[in-house]
Amino acid sequence: MFFVKENIYHIYNRSNETVFYSDGNYLFFLQKVNTLLKPVCEILSWCLMPNHFHFLIQATDISEKYIEEKHRKSTQILSKNIGILLSAYTQAINKQQGHKGKLWAHDTKAKQITGGSDNYGLQCLHYIHQNPLRAGLVKDLNLWKYSSYPDYMDFRQGKLVNKQLSLELFHISKDDLKEQSQYLIEKNISEKFY
Image 1 (cartoon, one colour):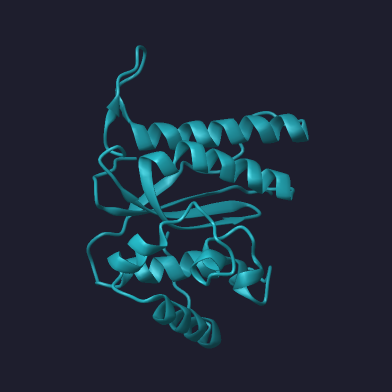
Image 2 (cartoon, one colour; image 1 turned 180 degrees about the vertical axis):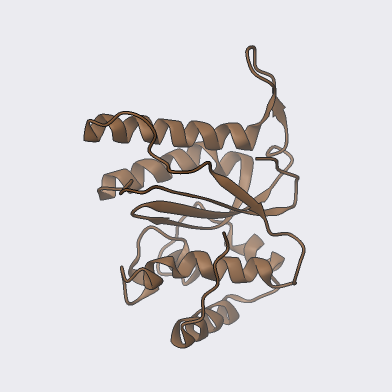
């Protein structure tokens, strides 16, 4: 993964099996996100699903800095921290479940979405938030605790997502965001962003 400051990226990975077994698993992962990702990028939206995750982030100056390592080529700090996050989580789940080996089925992707149509980032934000609804996990997006959607709708005062930056980047108000999200839900409009 390669990051350039001020560019927006959709970061995601999935497993062929469940990776979040309990509330404690989700919370452990989010604590790691808070300590490893939040300090090195701006998180615009996120959603954790039973077998995968999505983050929409904007890279910062810190994201693109390189860390020199003794036995490996230098790595950008955001890439390294994503690796540490997933490794720590894999080790914890393997210990919990008595498993060994890889937890994630693929390499983590960081798809740059800066550029293209002006609303591509906003569409990706909606796509990320609508995952639980499309998967049939909830009938109301505010009921899925493991997403930034309740933060945007002021049902929760979460600290991971930078709502104000997101609204500025996508040139939208909170009311417009709510209206657009409701429209997409009612029309069952979805697009894959990976």
